[in-house]
Length: 510
Image 1 (cartoon, rainbow, N blue to C red):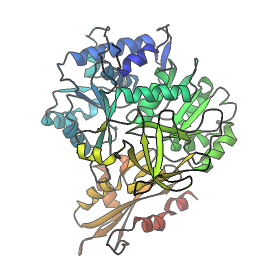
Image 2: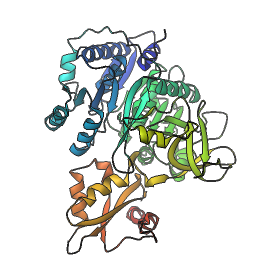
Image 3: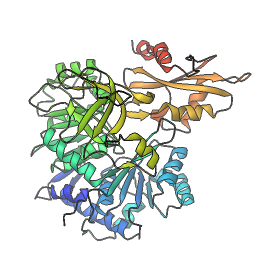
């Protein structure tokens, strides 16, 4: 019987010469394919030795490193469920994720071991390891004593492989359950659709705690047996320097803006490049056009979500890549635009985007009612995004329902931040809106009303949030006002607030 374990498929694509370089790091280290094979086997054997229950979750909040990638692959290999956590998350957030997912294993950076282990042990997590970005930590110490031979555990396509937490607009995060089949089907479709070929080299400059860097980029390189040039953190000068050695680059729009600020970004620097992919946030048409002019390359924009991996893509070849669109539904993905009463809309009309396909997630972790709510009777997932299909069939995302803010490629859900602000002494009410920003695409601005007799200062509110939330969620500015604009039903009119503050950062940039 066929083993549908995603790791088995990735491993089968390794080149025949296992001593070739698989990953070249920015610190001058090279990892061979054999290193990946042996390292993941030892970590998988360590996990297997812990006596974990079937379907156990392995929660990981560590800095980016090749060893962290190996831990992800080892978790798949051992048949467990990987749970990546943003490195910026603070104690209140980690407490929620551990309480909700109930991981059997928690891996964190040494510097956070004190507070993370306290939360984990209190919640009943049996095993807490450390892993640092300098190849140290208790996880590696323990794995070093394990065998470097390991047979990937048999898994069905429908078995759970990863849980990705996606913040809920009503405050708390939801765990999107992705299966081995979801991710493998998507990796194979993208390999073909994006023209991956022998000799391709990927510059990996993204974080590895969300879909873009962990699944799209890593799976793309591994399923093609391609070398990765690995950057622990994005460095625009280093990326430009490495471009002549690479063929593929993936980034969020913010990275492209920063690369355009480098004088070394020229057609000559990009002479060997085959593909530049952008996603995770809207790409401004100015960036799209300027990139084309400077490099001679047209950025390929695509669209995906934590719940679905990739859904659509501009064409790699054979048709135009259109700026301001996310292309067509990928092979195997069915996409439609519907109005609120459930009728499909004709070309050019705006409505809710719904999708169906082998890449669509299994549902939200321990939220059967929420899962049911987010799927239609005929099995389509309601993305919560609003868009249209133009006259030539290209999909255009025009906005997001429920006021989602995408800042620098990360999702920021206003309800979550408003909850923290509203809990502060002296705060009567708050509203968070997204406004345009030249670097991050969009950032949050908080507007707050004080309780009678209370004295509040915007800077203090922002400072208080910094100790509680990840940096990307912190509003860039906070204004204390006497009242918020409301409609006749008393609901805050966020569209008016967005309009009021939309030029806030345009002025700063000018």
